[in-house]
Length: 457
Image (cartoon, rainbow, N blue to C red; front, side, top):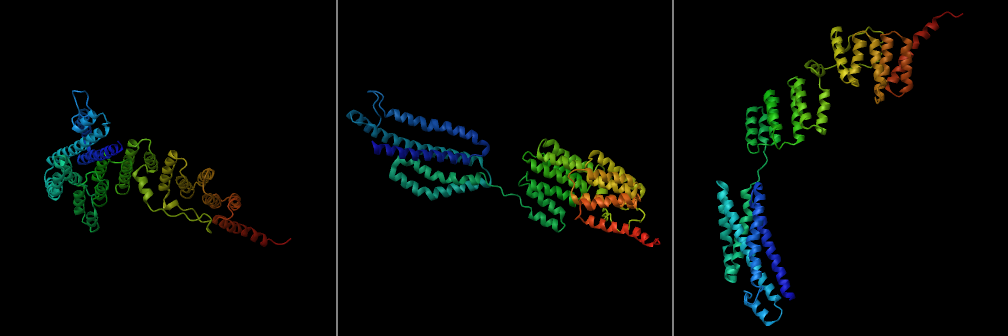
């Protein structure tokens, strides 16, 4: 009984392996979109072509009644002898399972290969036929040897020997892997200034992979940076954003780059705002939408504001210089009219964002140095000092600036001296504190000189 059970288990494992191999090879030969339907067909075919015949074979050899004796003589003899007939039954069942599994596997692979060959045309079909001929020629001798040794019982194994290599190599012909687009030639053309040829190279590569994000962005960049055609660049980017496979990150990158082109090349803040708003609308509630919203808040409101941001601005010199008594000059090289216009722009910006430190500091300088309203400038610097979380070096600069303006514009030496002393007390190690000490000594020198010039009593 034990040898018969062991033999049945070994045969069962071998047959299960053949059935599993047939399933795997069939699914590999099937396009991905059809695999669900083929899997359902395989399940039905396994029940009809394998499980049902095996069940019939088992019932035929059990011996249901005296009139329906076991089909195989050895099982019938064992039952009639009165000795245990289970080993003979397992032996017959294992042989039937092996024959059914091998025939089922061969029939399944043959049907799938024929169907796959009919679906091919052109060069892949020629390659598939060549593969079948090579496998048939190379494995026909081993298959013939199996038939001679085992007879018709080994027909299924011989057929599987021929068909398994065909089914194993055919997927490479049915579903060839597409190489990613290569844009080295396009980059080389752009480096040599051959932009029309670069455009053709990019389009040629995109024909191989129509949804390649890198290629489409390279094409949009070519239109914007080299052809100076912002309308075509925008149309290309919007087409990218409408592709079904685009990821949220790619959408954000494309629209941020489009906003950069509108700002740097077109000088159009409104168009940049419109591009970033698409990110906020399509990715509502995401981190990418929040980042786009923050950038929208930092965009200049008008083209004039943009030009002002892009213009080269002079760097303000330290407030505590040696020339405190010079007359005031317009801030940043602006006359009084332009300074007033720039101050109004700063006020509008601060209405929308009161904690905009650069705008408030610039407004203070415009008031004090361009519009001769040092009192308003001092008020703005005071608001900056009241803002929490400002770095110490900036607070020291602002205190020094207030002290210099009190002395230079307000002609209030006492108030200026108090501010400089406060600066030294609160930030003694700062560069502004060293300058303040020197300024205090210079302020005290004239008074000491006057005292020394008075006649002694």
